[in-house]
Length: 218
Image (cartoon, rainbow, N blue to C red; front, side, top):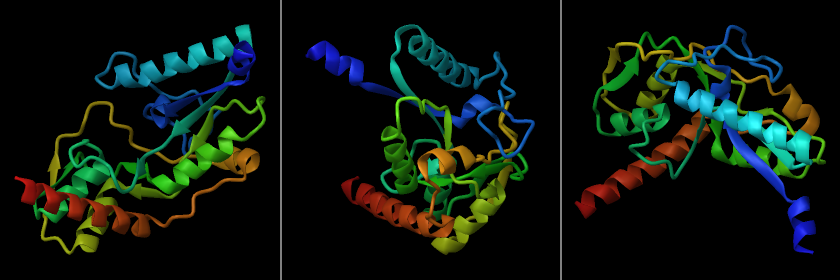
């Protein structure tokens, strides 16, 4: 009985859009193999995920292991750590404190941001597909924003006095991120619904309360 349950189990890999590296095509489709540096400062993360995917699919082919692999694009929402280093949390915390908004490079590089509720909804639909739907499958919001546009929206939504400061570009920083989610739409019947500004307002409210609580605790 225990062996039967193990054989029925599905192992899910929460992989990443970083497997695309600095893509040469946009939007990124699951049949695009990416443009990834194997030796740069981001390589340990990018290649680690790619290696894990290789092992997942080898075990699927050799042993019939039931797998599902999702490529997660930038996700955000309440309950993020204020110091996690992600662009949205960085910008919101800086804006709420009226500190300079730090952008690496020109700010013209693009990202696509998916609200956490939409992402979890996509995962739940993915989990309930038939075993032959293994992925990889893009889970993200296809709305594309420049980083500087994101900064300006957050400044406006927080009514912040923060200036924007440009720092040196990060090495191997992807210049484009935009998922093609046609596979998710066709196989899962899924697409995100939360508008970026609605999602940002929800995240801003959470961070504002978290910073106030931290200030009282200190």
